[in-house]
Length: 260
Image 1 (cartoon, rainbow, N blue to C red):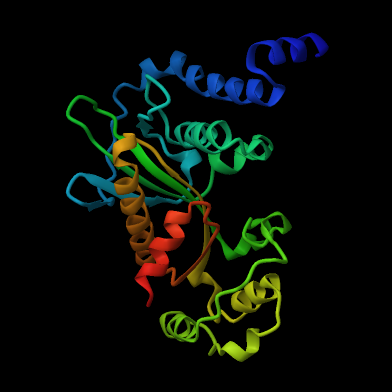
Image 2 (image 1 turned 180 degrees about the horizontal axis):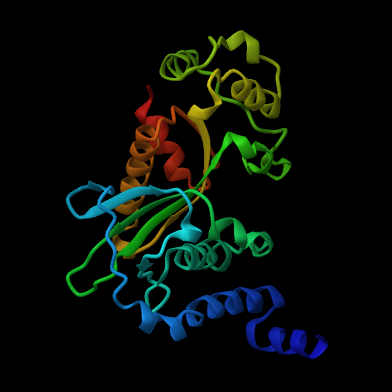
């Protein structure tokens, strides 16, 4: 292990970067021996919805059991849906943003319900993934990152807009919300109060690990399509309220500009 660490530091700069590249390498090369037996697996999901003419979106109940193959910008070869999403998460969150903590939790991105946005191109029989997001139900709220201490900060100032609280109560199955009940409370207390105000927990979920892939020149457009597709897919599945963690300031401004 000592020699491996020395070589990793020499070649990659640190052990974490080496681990990241190794995880990507395993995913890219794992399916090569079985891909030729799956060339006829070109199943199209007839239930997917189309957005902006050529982009498809859908909710997959469990990506680990999905047999379809997808292209990504990080591999020359199509990969099984589960592997494709894990590869995209590693390349975007870990390699690009250096969120090395995720190396210990890659299995979260390999199973369970996910939103996917993808498109077919003229030259490929397999579609290309543009965006994905992990969807977690309230039955496993104890695993939600939204309520994890890592994503809490005592210096946060909650936005207790009265109109926002009113529209939230009207749009969801929640008990009435008033600004006074949240005054002088921490963000953690406010978030928990909001969650327990939901009368029908099946109408709530967590959406995290939203990825955007594809041409850099279309990044903002793909981000817009992903947010629009995700919102419509969750609404169509009966979800009225979504808890999420937003890293991109542009997304925060996007939602603020929508107001009610």
